[in-house]
Structure formats: C-alpha cells, structure tokens
Length: 116
Length: 115
Image (cartoon, rainbow over the protein chains, first blue to last red):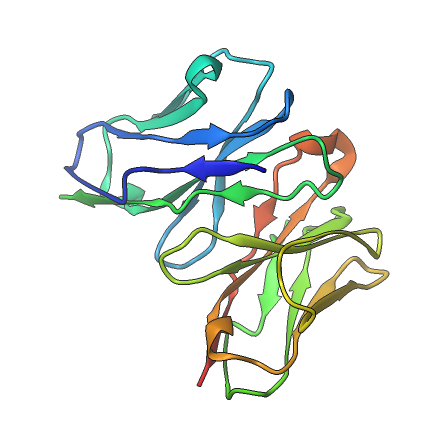
C-alpha cells in the first residue's frame, strides 16, 4: 500500500515570504516516483516537479526547490519569494513501480494563501 | 499544442441517473487516467486505459466504467448516481514510454453535482 501525508492543511503568508510544504510518504517499493502538483481555484491540476527515488539530488527550478530525503521518507517543496499567484492547493503524489497502472496516490493537499 | 480537454465543464444530475464524461488527451499521448476529487480531498484513482485496454482500476464500485477509443479519447460512465458521486472528475493523459517515470497532465475537470 502507498500513502502520502500532508500534515499542513493551510498555510498563509505575506507576499515575498518563503513557503515550505511538507510531504511524508509510505511505500514498499524500492523504486518510486514523487510529484508535486498545484491546483489553482480554476480546478486544473498543474504538474510542477517529479523526482525519482534513486536520485536524491535536490534541485532548484526558478522559485521552486525541493528537498528529497529518503531516510525520512520526506519530499518537501519550497516556494521562494512567494507571490499572490502562488495561492492554490498543492498536492504531493506518489507512484510506485510494482504495478502496471501507473496510478498516482495523492495527499490531502495544503492550501496556500499568499496575501499582498 | 492543446492540453487535455474535458466535457462538459459542469453537470447537474439527480440520484439514479446515468452520466457520461468525456476526455481528449494531449496529442501523441496514448494513456488516459480518470480521478475523482471530492471537495477538500486529494484526487482518487478510478481507471487507467492504455491503447484501448484497461490497465488499472481503483477501489470504485461497478457503477463506474470507462472505455478508450481508437483516437485515444476516453469516456467515463457512472450509473445509478448517488449523492456521494458529487465531485470534480479529472482526466489525465501521459506518454507512457518512460514507464513509471511518466508525468501525467490533467484536464480542467468536470464538476458533477448530484441532487
């Protein structure tokens, strides 16, 4: 079984502050893939980043960065210098490798509100 | 290039009715997945189809069915609607040539309300 936990329900910040979203996952697979998606009020899920379990290198992409730590089963996501347009629900998701259906298991989401 | 498209955008049905939701994947993508997102929760996997065959099914009753057509578009059918079926139904397409590392791209969703 796979499980994704996003302990933070809501986060509210003032523009230009950094926002870090926590994600903890459970899986029996040795190879797996982790994702972050953004869901603005329009409802469409927007793909942000993907990380493979065998690559723990952390990266920065523009204002986004992520911290993948296999030892603690965590995949945290940071938005630097937040903007009002970053206001959305953010989902962490996991895909294992033992089945053929490539399904994503999502966390419950964290609502981020960036105030001007 | 066009993204994933879904129709209709919104739908209102009454209990016991049947509904059909439609999805067109990104051009070149042969895999389509369906997810149900109840308000305040993360999306839950319903089905995945690849090359017109069902590849996976989530924990949903037999009232839910789907199919994929030769042009890779897909339909999700729900029979005998219940109030609890009210949700945002999301379709995602992917290019599965990279195996489990594929990234799924989602459509805008269909908001279904069952009264």
